[in-house]
Image (cartoon, rainbow, N blue to C red; front, side):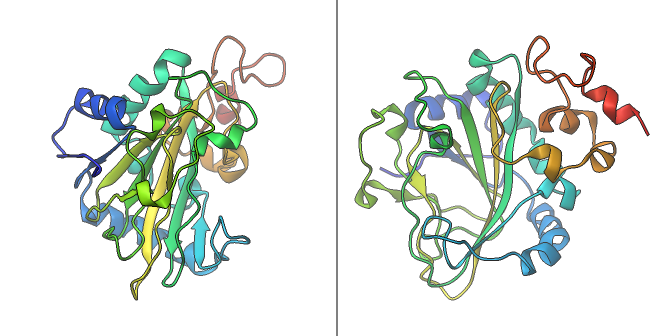
Length: 267
């Protein structure tokens, strides 16, 4: 079973319907290649000094560069991409008043890196188990280079979001999310997936942007990744996404029950 693909003219209803069926979908050419190139050039100095992973899961030949909101202004367009945000609102909205930015990460899988262990991203909250059918995260993997089976395209198991938690995924059940540069793989936190093996002679680079329920802790600490002096310069929508908003009544206040956006007004 291949990963279903949609065109860049698809509606949020189209995307959500495929996610309901499979838990994952590729939207081809959603942003221009020029945007991906601009992001890469802004992040290149940081990528060059990023260490490889410290264990098999992170990958001894894989680099993971974070703090993308602070490090690349062009990246802001990905974090606030309208179709993605509308999809997140549909998928996460039933379980929260507001969703938020969960993590940002450029993942560079270098040649000879074996396939990553299959996993569900929502296991970051283990041992807690979310109710069946409740999605706590929505993730995107943007193709910064073309994704192919040979160079380590993300491997997914369509339909695994409906599996019981105790089922063990097998690599034989996965399919590659092959897609051209500027395309995006959208998948829920309950889908089994993992980075593919890079059997090519060139790096495979993708940008992961995750969103989660506003009452959960973010995987990437956005208040450290994007300190207030940088957050003050961001568009208001992005300020809210990284956490300068209330996730519910009094959820996320500071000081004497002050709204976090007040901090950004102070010099």
